[in-house]
Length: 323
Ligand SMILES: C[S@@+](CC[C@H](N)C(=O)[O-])C[C@H]1O[C@@H](n2cnc3c(N)ncnc32)[C@H](O)[C@@H]1O
Image (cartoon, rainbow, N blue to C red; front, side, top):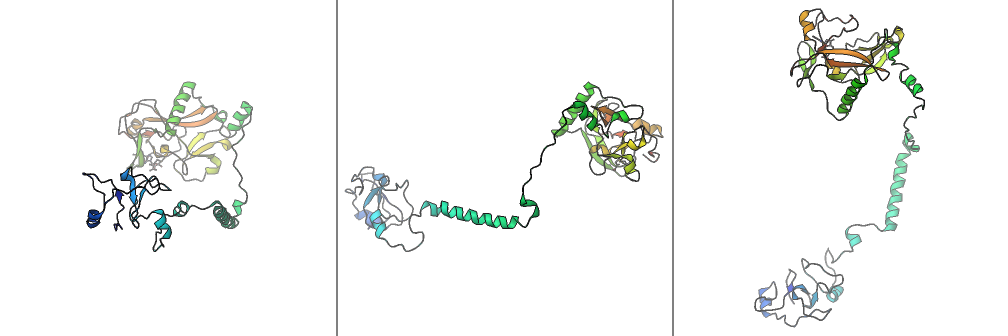
């Protein structure tokens, strides 16, 4: 018997190629000329002729069922020898593929699934909300465009503005929409927030900006001024200065806002202060809604700080102490 731990692929002996046996002593004594495949009876394709580690009989890899695609690592026993061989240790020969990959049979699987469902149901029953899944619906707008305009303007209506509000032209609305879509893409205005020991947070141009460039819209929560009269926030902005004061609206950027809330104001009591101004803060009627825009009122150099007049409309904001 060939006592090799390495699988042996027998080659027909020629002058140049001796059969591949691991043990030199056995190799020397072994004559493989007459070895043929026990299945097909042929001695052809000797490189594919596998020798049994017990009986030394030969089998073509491709004649075995199942076919063996490559030479097995470790000992190999032909089908008759492996039938009689008592398994001694694990692994015990070829494992069924379902067992090897721990594939569950359909019957076992449905059992496990129903067990899992029972567990899940048990857990879910302790949550009040999970009883019935209710889907959210998008709103259903009114069909009449005039009605829709009325709904849109029910609070934020430029027609309520004392003395009227300038309408943003079609062309300028296009520029504003372009800015909005750039923002959605993450293309923000070229400005950056910096800290100054005297002015607190303030905003600088991060590249040169041309006169009349839209920098940003002043945004935040919109509320009636009457609800905010006792607020001590220093960033509240008038959105709509209505003829009827109870309808006046303000933008409150304390909870939700953008970079606009960090832009500082000029000291509008001094010449130096006035000279620093490089933005104007303008309220526009944009498609029937009031909006506040901050726009460059001259060319701005890279590194220059941005300032506007906090008192563009009312003279209530104290700026005497501003640097
Ligand atoms: C809308 S916030 C601007 C951002 C503010 N600097 C910050 O740090 O949050 C307005 C406040 O900023 C400060 N501020 C604005 N302009 C200033 C200036 N020119 N000099 C000093 N402080 C200024 C004032 O405290 C003002 O009440």
